[in-house]
Image (tube, rainbow, N blue to C red; front, side, top):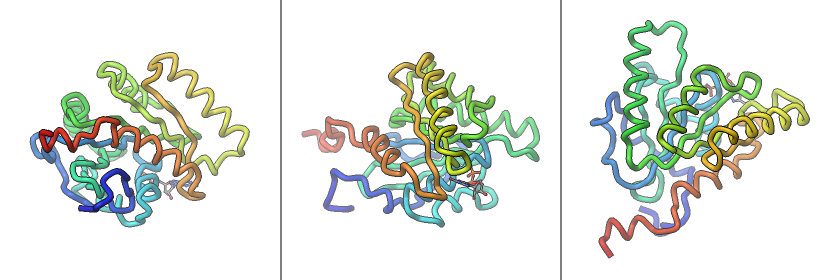
Amino acid sequence: MSSDKKTVHYNTAKFNKSAAKLHQCPADIGAEVAFAGRSNAGKSSAINTLTNNNKLARTSKTPGRTQLINFFDLNIEGVRIVDLPGYGYAKVPVAMKQHWQQHLEEYLQKRQCLQGVVLVMDIRHPMKEFDQMMVDWCLSTEMPLHVLLTKSDKLKKGPAQSTMLKIRKELTAVLGDLVTVQTFSALKKQNVDQLRQRLDLWLLPEDDFEEEFEGE
Ligand code: GDP
């Protein structure tokens, strides 16, 4: 464990385990943030950019792992990022989709240490059905949500900004202070610090949970 307990170093992310069901997840203590998104939205690229590790999210894409919840440990004990299964693989049968949606829902609703969800959307195709479902889940569980409008390099600055403002306005009307929205580009490494700052707020709450572990 790092001696620097107060700073999350995202480049220390290390694969911990994959889980198909809630009971297979690491112990429900500490703090974690989960990344969700439709397949091809740019979730793996965002995680790789955040962690400065181009191989990291490939772990979640290896055969057999794409439908699992993948956990990555960071330098602080009990602090993790979680790669949720990408949604919407065309070739997956409906029954299997429903099965895995159920596990996803169970994770989102029951996981105590989950501090927030990063919902990754392609800025050119925001707020599709899956995204709306995630927004509804966040609303019903009062889960903080950070929307990452990625591939913003695909749009000119003006349209990218106006899309971001429009989505922010729409979602704030529903979720209020629970939601934040930003543009992002993995390709150009834009606004990575903005993402890190949001995650820091979730993963390093003011009252130090390590004291809870130690029982004062
Ligand atoms: P995932 O299925 O959500 O994990 O998506 P990936 O991260 O694998 O990205 C899907 C495709 O979008 C790949 O071809 C990436 O190279 C591309 N992509 C991801 N992020 C960006 C970005 O910020 N800018 C551009 N131009 N392409 C991106």
